[in-house]
Amino acid sequence: MPANIFSAALPLDRPAADRMWEAYRAARPRAVAAGPDYTVEHFGDSARLADELLEIVLSGRKRATSELVDDFIARGDAVPRIGSHWIACDSTGAPRIVIRSVELRVGAFDSVDAEFAADEGEDDLSLESWQREHRRYWTRVAAARGAVWSEEDEIVFERFAVVWPPEHAD
Image (cartoon, rainbow, N blue to C red; front, side, top):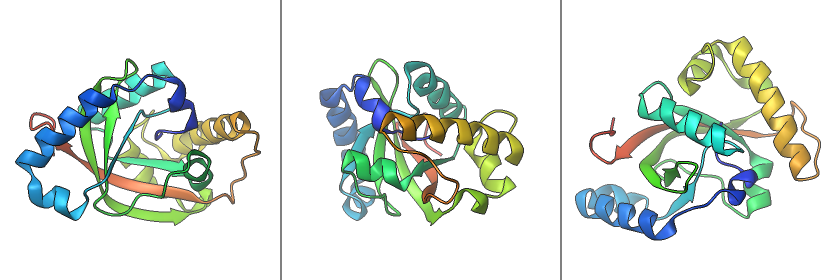
């Protein structure tokens, strides 16, 4: 589960994130030239989820995420593009990794397949688990912004690579 509007309630250490970005930019100038902008975010909608999902990214098990298009719109953010970057923070706001989008598509809930569900790395990695947990999650986050989630709502399905720091890079 990606960052969303709840993440705004969690702290973000933007100066530390900027320092992480500068270190990445110095080490990988061509990658930054191809995608010079970045966002600073948490995974999930709570401190617990931010840390839990970040840990499975750090373990290498999670290399995909999905987010409602309406959540991007509600935050005033553009939908990511291939090559775009984001800095994932833990629940304290400390930046931990730089992520780069490597594959994106927009689709409805029923367009996800078992391979993508497994790449999200959550729960038991099954499509059934992915569907159950994301129904709960998107119902909750839509309600938090005063909306009702529908399985027909557009979802951004993103595969990513961890690109910084070197000890966590793919």
